[in-house]
Figure 1 (tube, rainbow, N blue to C red):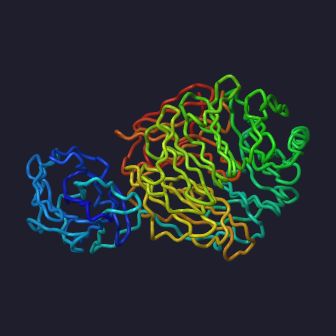
Figure 2 (cartoon, helix red, strand yellow):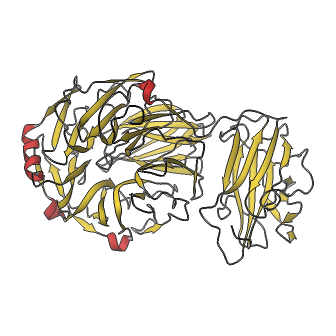
Length: 623
């Protein structure tokens, strides 16, 4: 850290309402560049960070909390006096200042806080605070002085909070691989998918491997049983490299595309839990892919005609777009659509990156530029890679997408196995900006898979990254554009991770993690991590069913509004290797109700629901 930088933190306790939960000895990350409240200050770089809920942390009036600050030249001072927060002696390395910060909250009498105190970077000191009777929020404010040098985005600044009361963890996971029964198999896993194949409202687990596939039925109570043979999937899947699920015949059962790297890829119809090869379609698919090099495939409704289509990713052969018309009618229209590009394809994702109601395509190439194709809404696509600034050439195999900054546009995370991965922020005008370093995600160098999910259901998409070596990590999204490693999380069981999928298998509102492993070891192989994060936040799970749109609602977009916060999620079919659950899991923070849910269906229809209570699963059928 540079001696030319100083952070000034103000500790402010004001009346408000409840927020969230964290760990017994808790690190609260702060970004000195983010703005939460307006500041009246001579310093144009002054910033104020977010509040932390004392109630959500399990801290009660009368409890004693200790605060220690991590960072250079850090000071904590205190809070509300009338309509302004007056800082009682802000210190840097050699200077002091006084500023007033608008509080706009009812005044609060603070007890047991010294008039001036300095803690953190220089001193390593701490301060002890007794929580007042009517305090529910701990406000952490920061003034940031930068002298010609910006803060290192890989450095973590913040406050370490210790309480006299046990604080439940905000993000925590328990390894249930052995107790759940999913480790008892011998698949050399290449891909992982969550899917409710039997419509019993519990997510089942599907593993794709080079020596076969495995389907685990979720029995409830944290238990899974292998039903691969029962479902007639035990005779297929040799040399399988990926899979994708969607209801291709709109009968209510999710069907399966199975990508075979050295052989005939298959489309299998789900007949009440038993999978049957669709001969005519699979024969055409086999013919199309007989040249070899199939790496994966994804379902999408690229023309919004209610029929899900299939995009097949190939290596050193032209990619294919199989347009679906009727029960068994598939035609490769990739040449006419502008997608029959021969490169080193590895995976792909379909998402509406410009919010025009049509899914675009992002194709991952290995050691060649990945490609972004804009859907022209007339069954053709345009390569906009260069203008969008996402043409990164790397040893990349997978990609994931989410709106990590809640600006209404889906962003991209491109996984690199031989160097720094890339976080591309969608600026909203078909332009993307590399935010990897500024977001604090530059350290993983051997990533093989990643997935976004709101693990602490606070309304911000967190990120999990697994690597071939160097460790597996959960990154906590602080809501201000930065991610911080959740150091207390241990995802070390899989020693050769190959894939990852997110889904709430126990229906408790918090997303769980499944990690595929390329080895057959039951001790350090495929792994299942149950989300055991502490209480304090609310959730809403949305299950969509199309009518004029495809039954699986692939391509549907949901916008959720809680107070002044908006979140966007879309239903997708994965990246050709891994697939998250079709139900959409939203974290609501402390919001007890969703003010508005706005759904845009692939058919173009829109649907609004208002005043939805939190902590429930809501099923929505297209009007």
